[in-house]
Length: 252
Ligand code: PEP
Image (tube, rainbow, N blue to C red; front, top):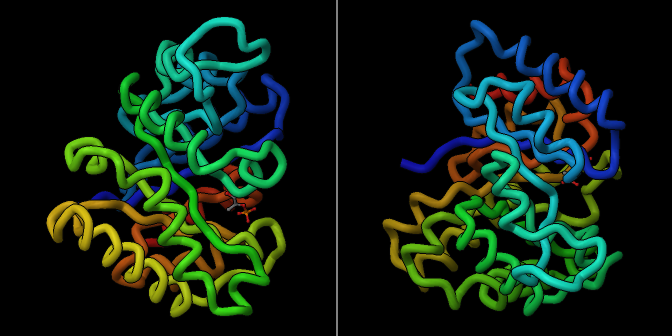
């Protein structure tokens, strides 16, 4: 059975002290609360060790927001998948639309990052999603299928089974505009079908596919109730413990 997951993506927000305080607040808030999902906090690199120490590993998985596409060596400023794993982090977000747009991460680069993340025991949360013009031109299915095929479909079935997908329409990220629950369901079902065609029904049925894009406590319940939506990747609303908890507890 696939897992429900709610993952917070803190992006380039919070100082170390603020980040640790937020992680502790979420950790406290989860005490005694029964959840229907795994909870992940994806934080800036520099926070990882402290956040891993601050939370109960049985309730919260810690993740990074990126890793390098190289193993090690003379790549000033980069952080390798092995370094991320050595902090105790278990997840890494890869292919976020901000990384694709601002740091020119191509399908090929992402393919290498995915391989390195898996080789170091990290679970990639692999982001896909179309920009507004692509949605308006009804190219979103093709765009998303290409993103998945180009970066993930050289993986063995055993490795693909370790991937979490996050569908994030770029026009909904940080804009306050959310895809409707029906729009999310439509494309999540398409993603699952695309996976099934390559890796078979069992792997497709077991792949967690998260929705991301202006998800908040007021809309999470309706979106998560859709059969092919297995939780969310949350940006802005993950930066406050109460709104993040509102999303974590939004499953019916
Ligand atoms: C994100 O960037 O992953 C995201 C979903 O952001 P927001 O929730 O702020 O739209």
